[in-house]
Length: 203
Image (tube, rainbow, N blue to C red):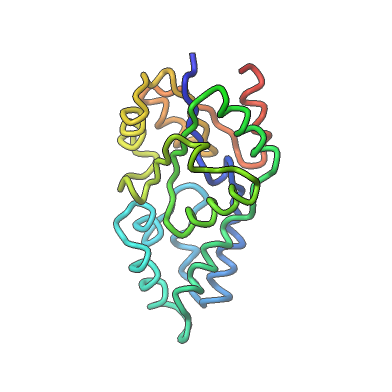
């Protein structure tokens, strides 16, 4: 029986647009190496180090600017990062409100400080108080762990305080779903663009 629900953020609740992000890095900053480090699911290089908590936000900005067009500024890096997030479908706000009345909700996301500020704003614009909607946010950059490492799922289970089989995890990455299942969590794959409501039709 499900007693808690854990959502991935990007690709599940928030829609991502990697091509727009790549275009922004190239056109605004002249940072062509973005194609080597940006991945829809699992970031690489300095982007992966940012989301894994190995680089601070300022260190990441400095590393990007060191390879960018002269005159580029830290705020330009943030603008490029923001281009990754394309929005959130309004029906998901209603779904989260309904689910939160019956289950404790959590977030578990490979994420970074820049994107976190942006998606908090998106939730607020849809009338959601993320601080009360979610019991806890498990963010990779704070935990210094990345999905699909089993350790990040084990730590989330420990902090939620329920047996893993009583936790439902929803992600858009097959690799992450398999990793969650490997520690006993009931996990469901929902690729970006699929109707999230279908997962909960039987609830």
